[in-house]
Image (tube, rainbow, N blue to C red):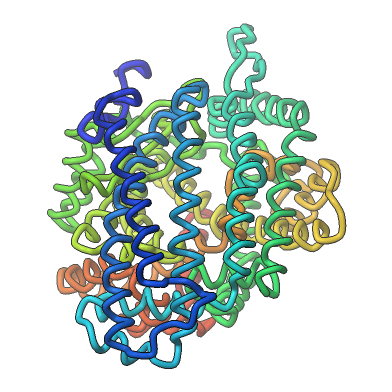
Length: 603
């Protein structure tokens, strides 16, 4: 199956096309719902400037009506957004889709004003009687966590007028900067000399895939091409970074936030004690990961590991994976864990829910998005046949399965924090990775698989820590003045030196890591990094419990997945007797990796 023939995702069961009557009608219906919500808010006096009801039953009736409307509207909007995004993320040149998304964002601002400002501010004034309100209506008991969290967050609101202005300006501010970043990075091309002497101009999504090329010369050429390409747009991307981070700092201050990390912790539904416990364990694990980097350098005949060799393949697989073979391998191993999980993956394959191959204009990396209107998900890959992409396929299917476990929940009950959003994906990736290690047919194949596993884990622990340090320093400096591209490069290099340490060739790092990671350009989610580590280590802890309990674990695990939008991370982890504030839990998950480092050193 050639790259051109690899499956592209199919959303024709959602809407037939961007200009279809069905989507046009859906947009009209969405606008009508927004207007109905405006009328309801006016009629019931959901307004933080007006004294709220003192009668719990009256308040419960108003809140219940609001929640019902919000759930219906959110399902509609998220579905339309996913549909439009399916065009933009696979073809950034699609101007029609970009226009449609811009129009949708205008509507989303109105919805945010209704739900995140007016309702939140109004509900926050009823904190004292909230328990009585919830107790008086069964539908509110089902949404009790949402209501309690809303009250807690209500203290971080500006006035309704200021919030409305901030939302409207954001479209020309951070949202526009993030959009520009996405356009630049998805359309950027650069020439790379090939092994046959030709020098084609390639999109960065393809150049990034040279990182794991078998030929070191090609890895180095890819690394150098990346550097040259990013340098050509570094000033534009620095402007994007400054625009996004500047807006975050201004609004967080105006909302009474101590700093952007405080808001991030609230979004992650963890406290600072939990983050510090995890970060401490991560830092303590650096010597172990540096042993892995040094062992890899030694196997490559080098004293230190240069950046272009971080993703260098090691060993030799007895088999390569075409996409159909990757599908079969994932299905086979999912079946051993849960027939239901395997059946879900087969449904995704059979119905073309996955956009597989890299191409010009397509977003780099991989992701999964829910399409709640049809109770499905869609997955984007840039599959190139490498074993790591087999593991990534399993990972993203885990996200899809997580969404599937929540189909009986309302939209307000499905608001998963990033920390718990990785639970199923890490579990699925671990299932397939461990199977590959156990089935290795030779020491060289075992080495190849261990390399993929340890490389991925080092990225989620060591590199994520460097990203956290980078973002912390960027916010600190941006609070005083704009940062030049040179300053951003310097901050990134310092963060990498502190985390990778003597495991790497410190003269050959990657100062441009800040340019292409979209996570840095999200005004809505600062510190979009440590939740991945949380997901890896929490997921690893759950996998250890699964190994102990076997099939008895599955129902409790599925119940956890269905509930991840309905509690704090600590409360949900407690179901499995996990204490997230204990460094010991995080250390236990990291210690489990050491056996694989030791085996890697031996091979």
